[in-house]
Image 1 (cartoon, rainbow, N blue to C red):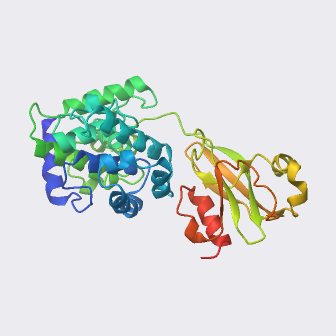
Image 2: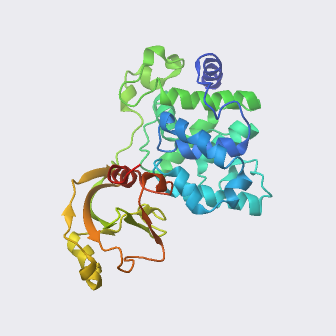
Length: 351
């Protein structure tokens, strides 16, 4: 189906997206940064973060040299914070192991922290013109429909087979410019016309080549039987508040949910939190339950119950004094914080 490649290249050059800030460059640092930010995140959200991140870390050397806390602070609100930690680790590996230059093949790029096969393929195609196809979530949908691929993509073997088909769609010797347009075209089609629930097949440039469309079964593909199971997890957030209004934040462990971020101390229940503070009972006021709220993660839905606890100013610092800090104003929230906790704090603290 080399016609598929040619048609998509031609369509992208005329109708595809071209004004995004990470387009029009073959700088691997900028492409890599955009690819990591765009994982599980809408373009509109990334557009607000990408320029701020580049202003603070203009190249891989600046990112590698920065403290992780600074990286997490700028990432705060984008979610999936493992991406930020891997971003930092990857920058350090590029500087230490590759002399500050990203390797030029997808195979080598995959050896770096946080770079999977599809991200590696995107960097290699966009920056180095490598003949290799991406296969992120949207592209699986595009190619699954184009090929009417009946394999269950919940099975890793079937996904590898789809990738082999994706490679077979590429001509033997595409130019670097063609690989850029084709790769971007796949992304544009998956993000727009080839939507999950209501594909706009009548406007699709490859509809005549799409087997699922010809069979009038577009929404039957791609096949994936295993569904995401999200379980509900209740968390009690203790908001220890001094008489001057400052609230205590504690750095989370370096693994697990919100790893390395600052947060209100987390407990399974209020009783567990009060037990942890038992040695400081004289310094505590009466607990005040605040309205609970929910926050969805990939595999969990957190039910967050903040509890305000007055704390006498003269008492010793509780709960992780070596990794925590008091914050008294919104201007002090320029640190790595989970988005829902940041929003809650902004409603409690003065500007």
